[in-house]
Length: 486
Image 1 (tube, rainbow, N blue to C red):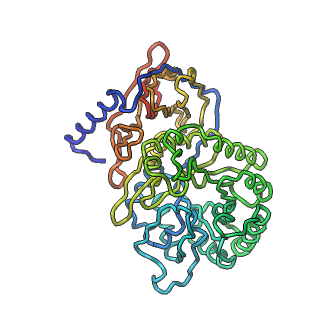
Image 2: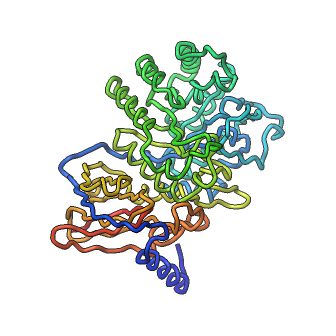
Image 3: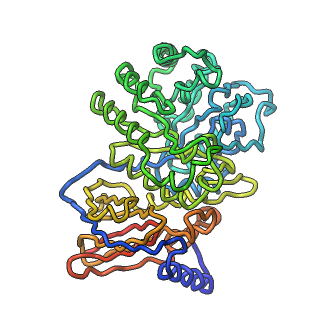
């Protein structure tokens, strides 16, 4: 990014002030804690395709949204990683229909912008044309990403699914890593798609019928599933029954909801969620039994399209990036944050006509991208009882470098952190906002993400080891990436 000298000095001064001034949301208490890194104890690997985004299938009703001409959105996607996975699905996937021979473009809308579906009523019908699939291939090619594509098993016919899968497979080719045959089938009984007695056996029979019919026409078509909302009681039997038919297992996770519940707050978002551990336990069980990778194919802060004042705040950046590392440390293969349009929790907001911008969650994903892929190593925090919402992760990158990412999700206390010395120096890149509920003034490395995803750090501290350790101050409600140097 090109910055004139005057603007550079202004941004650098602002970043310096924010790093050395007391935190606007810090409490009176400051704690001293030690972080020990164990490079000799290796954990799971973070692959280059770990990061992902998820959009509603209905967005394909506008064939020009995901296209090679949408250069602004492509720039934002690439900013999150040179490789990644775009997932097309969501609630609207059960109301999207393949239209192989549209009458001109009458069945599509060149201005259709689709945000996350709230699930309050059946979405409007949307037709998907061959042009939308061709443009989608151009989009993922330009971004360097791959594709998960949802098919309609809920209200569609197997004949249409076969025709759509055949065309998508022909156009997307090696960019397609999996078809998903439905979205949250364990909730079909709630939204009227199936009767109240719809259970896993009925779903498994339907899934197998669609799978076998598509495979008969498209033998090389890859699949994943079950793409359930939360039901690990469906995940385990699905894995056992279809372990030879799927490339990976997928499930969804939302930290909070519904948004109308006043107890769904920032404080709750940042605290450990027992439901998440239940999903991790199910994931690990299926991985041990089947050897299949696991992906959170749709996730975000608050279901039913998010909650203002929570999902669109700096807290979501800390929560989202921390979730990525939690999943990786538990053996997950990847994650897709749901979004679109101007949805409350969307990482990237906007339209091709009006441009796109980075929401706070996008900054958390960018911090993850700056740390990069690699192999996790063991970390141990001594004194965690003084700051219970402090988390830390470390990894060895492919070039052998050592990095640590630290999250102080405590909103009431700064942390004085002593890090076991892994070198003579460390560079520090900080994720920061004036307040934990701030929706606009987020920075990474002292600077915001600009138009067309332009970004470069204007402030990166350099720490020097003293007495065998590095001292790091982590203000309340902030995060930092440490890159160690010998």
